[in-house]
Image 1 (cartoon, rainbow, N blue to C red):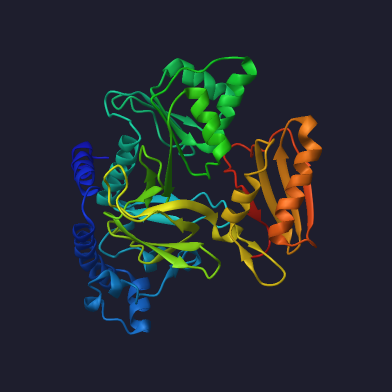
Image 2: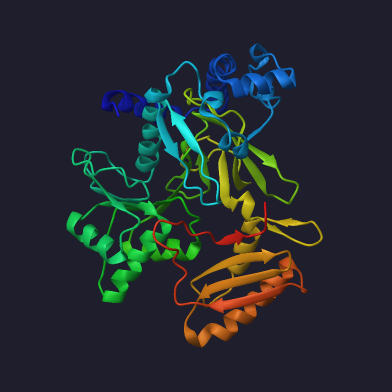
Length: 417
């Protein structure tokens, strides 16, 4: 990372997040008019895509024009040779390769050019800043799955692998004494529970920042109470970096529209939308109208109380592959299930697993004396969504924590894609 150029990108992003809608659109379209000809001229995948659709790249000049471009799905890129999806303007060895976790069974490699890496890092720093982190002033501990990263003393950052035991994370936390804690939801939760098991009180922090997994209300409360700190959530993709983040008003997730065009494409199932993103900064391996595989709900319209006019998401519902499928052909958003089950009192966490079109297991954590009541409520609530003839097996377990290095999915559909 070149610190000076990254800081220049960071200062630019600090300014552009306050643009009004007209100036924001003008910025997006200016970047779009540079990206599209580059992708057509240097990336075989997009040259073929445009030619087969009969699209002249010089005619893609506005956001409305962009919707004429066919959507690229993740499987289109997962099986492609690098030479067909990476820009010929770069040598493959000069690009940085990043591999997605493959939590749905199919990882993908993305190739970043050096300029994009600076912008990606700047986006991350901006999301941290909005959450209250101050570069140079705060010590920050990061619990992530990026095991190749080393701690950065000059930044006052310490990385800890999410594969460490909760006790080891807690020891690192106490030794480093951070002001801000950032990490995947499950490891943060495990660390807090490890401290509670010791009967220990955790020190007050300036902010807790979560990422990579769905942040359920119960875990948000747990982290906020344990550290006496506001909790902020960031939605990001390995392919693109932070794409949406919370401000101190917590009125939805602000979209990074100054670096991407983010479309909410209706799925035909209620208020659920498919997230389709055109990254306006990634030139080494352009991603144009890229279907992320995630579902989201549109957030409040208009200016946020913080003053930003960036569009917002109400929530990222989960992965499209984990939408529940029913016998009558209906598809149920993971969000509808989590919202309904989340209203049941008396249990801390749960996971819904769909085995076939009518068989579900609901793993949950609760006090032993509440097991029967919670199990009854789970059957009633879930049956109202998936049908009274469904086989629903609630199962109380001491812990739902996944194995080290794996992300927790609240709803998991195990049907063939």
